[in-house]
Length: 592
Image (cartoon, rainbow, N blue to C red; front, side, top):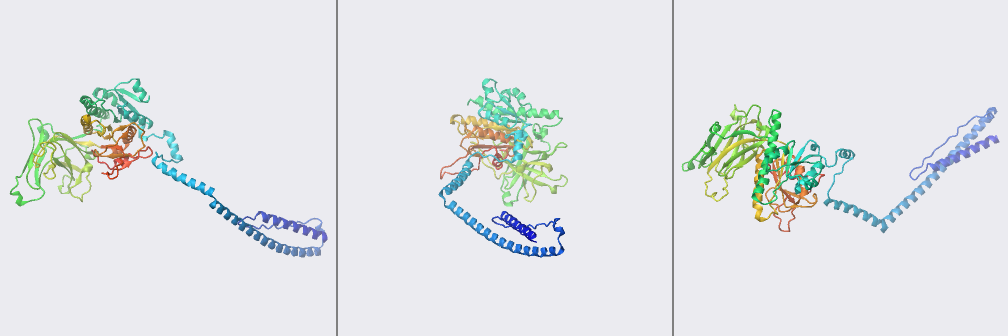
């Protein structure tokens, strides 16, 4: 019995100690976990010979010891919980004291304030710097595959740079090479000086813009053209050869090359104009009808007006002339014809109309009638106003400029157009420029018709011309330079190619992308611009649909003095990480 009791007491002591040790290890600041271990009794060979009475007494004692152990365990748990709460309160108070010390400590406050100020200053200073788009891992891997500057459409595009050794041409060539384009450069001679200016991978072609024969080899294999050449002197012959006839020769050579490719495909070039009417003989006047009409009836005024009359004839000089007068109040005269297009040709494949006309500078209304030919009651009329000038000119009328006569009608569908009308009305006539303009009667008109063609449609520009605004040029030669530049621009518009005419301000030799740019139409700019920014605009305009058939001026942002603000323009910060050209050109007028 004594030995058994001793063994039981020893077991109980060991169990209590193990419980205490486990309770201490599982107690933390926030939670106390109690683990109870129940000893497993094992029967020995010596105890197997004891009697049943001894076993019963031993069982009673074991129950008594277990009850005492449970009471002791509860007391220990209560004491441990109290100690944990005290330690938690003391640790919380210590944390609060540390926080107060950190908040009051001037050294810590200084470090935090400097850190916050550095972050704010870094963000503020980045506003005026060249920004860079942040890419994720997938985008970064894609960029590493083909380079940061590469444009997807550049791999299959060959660009001919006219004037590759000029100030802007050198930068255009390098920007094109960085973006993956195939570049051909037209130079007047190949020497050591020229080869040192340009990368070795550029294909140099010797030629002269004044020599049409030398341009045939230059335009071969090219998809787009950037014209950066300019006359080196103010001599009239040099200006006319480079800035006027040079643009005409390059555009014509490019059109001829596209026509040759189309003939090889047994088709027609997509860049060619479609001839609607050409007035070269008396037979070409057949089908055109002259009609008269009035917008309203004025019985009283009709008794005193001079009436109206008009005719369309082919004169001795070989010119088709539509002329007459309208003295009736609210009257007008029309020259109209039903369109006879070849089988398979419709106007929806084209962008607009171009009229080669001459006369005394009146304004006219071009009307297109759409709808079924069999039922005229369902026809819809759409009109667009055009202005001419004294002498010959070519007027572009995009289909998007036509407005419905009835405001409730839908926008015009060129596919349904079947009748073309040219109308003269004496109202809304402006005085003709020139010494004899005021002497002419605005109720009389004379319109010489050469041809009417449909302009090909397209999404991108084909020919980019770098012209000038005239700012920064000496007064003595400014008029000559602008006259030659304007003549070259007109020849490009008449070519039928998709064009973009860039007129930069005075050029400066400084890095690009540092200052905001102004895009405007109206000859109002006077600030300069860097050659690098002009080159970047030319490269971005190659695949920008908003740049097609537009002319615009560009210069640095103008900061007016206080009280001298005359107008407000939108400035765009140039950056290769964003397309600043599209929003800048989207608000500008087309066919300018």
